[in-house]
Length: 131
Image 1 (cartoon, rainbow, N blue to C red):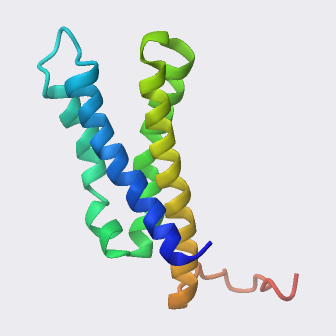
Image 2 (image 1 turned 30 degrees about the vertical axis):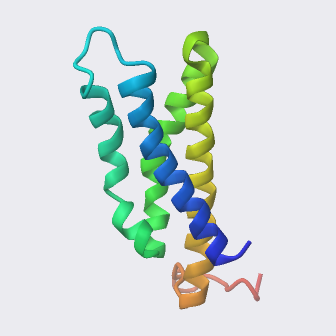
């Protein structure tokens, strides 16, 4: 996988997920008892935090951006197993979250290597070549 493809995958996943949660909670299945804007705001705000760094191609942001995706995975998997009425909506959410997750992992790794970034090993720990 190339760095460019991984970045494209990340962008498709993040922007797709961002658009999807707005469309889902505002138009396709708004909550009957809550303000129609409440859930779209709650579900989109976390995705906005890493968005600038992801668009700019910052490998560090791609790495920590995965943590932002975890609630979307859990939400989608929970609804897929428990709610027949919104199952297809959750499947779309899971697809976008998975695309973003895979893209961010590969981009952070590949771009980090290109830039010479790495996790430093502890003093006295053998290198990969010595193992």
